[in-house]
Amino acid sequence: MTELDGSTDLWESIARLHAWLDAHRTHDGAEGLLLRVLKLSEEVGEVAQAVIGATGQNPRKGTTHRWEDVQSELCDVVITALVVLRTLTPDAREVFTAHLERVTRRSLGSPAS
Image (cartoon, rainbow, N blue to C red; front, side):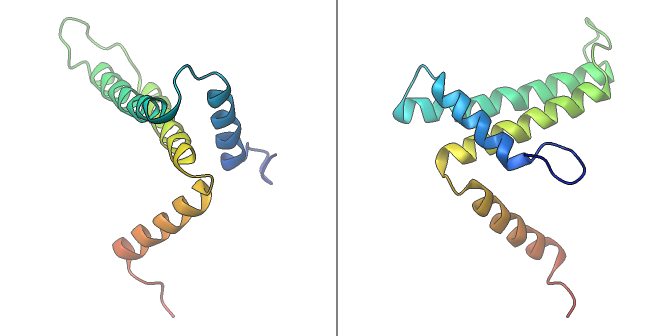
């Protein structure tokens, strides 16, 4: 499924990735859920590694990454988080949309009438 601009539909992709991961999982139940949540921490660590590499903060390694690598790793964090959310609920799209609306309202205020 694609959107009008030809890009891949986010939630269709998340559903497909979730199904693929479920079909290939080695752990079920609470342990499987825990491992999927921990995968999110791994991805966040990769963002940190890319930032350190892009800024050359490790004098032993120097500059090892580009800011495009940071962008890619951030995308991996978002994808992983959405797959974990889908693991917790089949209504991930609705849960995320409602939460985004609450955060937006809280941060930006109510839209002008």
